[in-house]
Image (tube, rainbow, N blue to C red; front, side, top):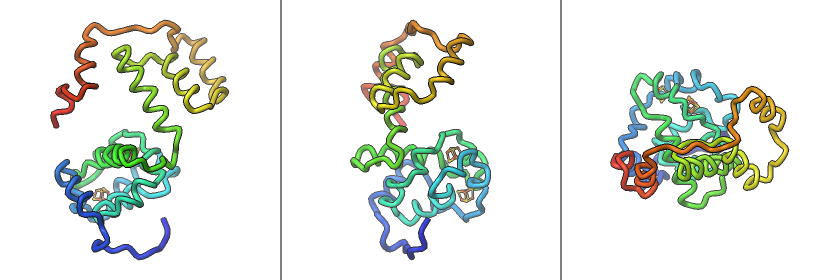
Length: 187
Ligand code: SF4
Ligand code: SF4
């Protein structure tokens, strides 16, 4: 992170109201650093987890939406579990990713949302992740045709990848979720 001085007065109030409505209490953070020290992928972040929370409490939406951290976060929830103030940090990362897409901010890690979209397409279609279709979709969209070939072959040889998709019985419930009417969207 650079050393420009940032003050809460410059913050985006609409963004702060949104976090409040989603019950993400970023103001409860006292910068103890437990979230950052427990994050398994923090070495790859451009903003530390505790910096994300502090910037969010200052309403620094623009900086956050352009960061690599929001896309590299693995949503493992370790930070939220370790936070002594029960701040829903993984939920905050989710909101930031969603806002970045909604506002058309170019993702700092463009392949990540491409992968997310391939995953969602697979779940929408089959009711579950169909790995081979998902990987094919990701590769076509990202242009990364040859990446991870060795790993893919090794998984296939060990029977970890099914060539044919399997569907689920209650696909109507999945349809409801994607239409925004499902229970998961009530919160
Ligand atoms: S663990 Fe919680 S209180 Fe501590 S720095 Fe992280 S967000 Fe703030
Ligand atoms: S949810 Fe994201 S930020 Fe939190 S510990 Fe996991 S990877 Fe790190």
